[in-house]
Image (tube, rainbow, N blue to C red):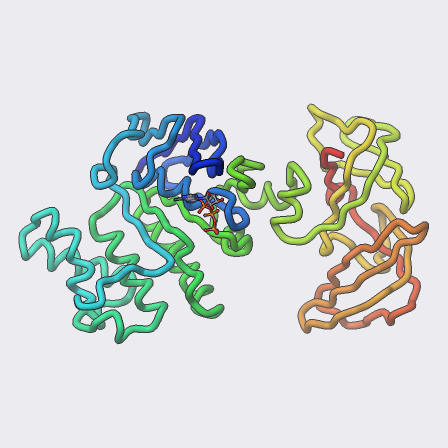
Length: 354
Ligand code: ATP
């Protein structure tokens, strides 16, 4: 298993700074995601790990050994691309065998390894077919087998599921997850799909304009985003401007246009001061719930029933703006124009820099 370490990585293309000083550690054996909107530098970063692009500044280390200037073919990385990049004139078997032939393995060893790689992605029955005779999902499985067959130390995946339909994407998510678990290799996966990242990652970094906005396990980033960009990019959130009134241990009391709100979701080493922004997830707001927590009141503006969830927009009293609210398993729906009482637990009110 290989730990990947990036130190102060920078890359410019002309005037564009594609990657702007990234420090990152991908622990050995992790499935790690580079996540961010189009143009944030994900692919450039992945290609630098692969060795296809050389950084202008910084160092790349595999298990403490510097590989910044090591040629791509000497880095022991398997790559999977969005476009599959299979050779159309070769059979599935030959596509997967290619990397082993280049490495001049014996015929019997090649057959054994290709067989095993195809079994790993459940494609052994298709060995004689040409890529054009396969579905998109099957082609991507072959591409995965081709990357895995050389037994790489590191697997790099660049938007591998974006060409697949929604159902196949879900299937392939769990397949890639289990292949990574079983092989124990370190994988770096590029996507702009936050749900894909949240559902598969051991760890992730959210990038913006070539910079790291936050890194950590998916649950930490979702529940405790460090800034408005991460809160907004990972799922949906409501934002409220607030002034700090008091901090008492682990609880802060804040003044907002919607009334006083208490929060316990902040770094106790850096308690909120003065002006901040509060982030509240739509699913953290409960309609007409009894019990403790913060209370907000308003009028239902609109509602959309989606079966397993209803999405409401509530105009808060005091011209405090609108709140998006997700109501799971909705049995009784409020009607547009109804008065609505919302509650939210202090632990779900995240304090962000103002
Ligand atoms: P996407 O999700 O759209 O693929 P990305 O996050 O992978 O985007 P990159 O492809 O890494 O982003 O590009 C980062 C920035 O660098 C972009 O502004 C892009 O236009 C620029 N860029 C990337 N490659 C080159 C290149 N070879 N020449 C010039 N500019 C480039």
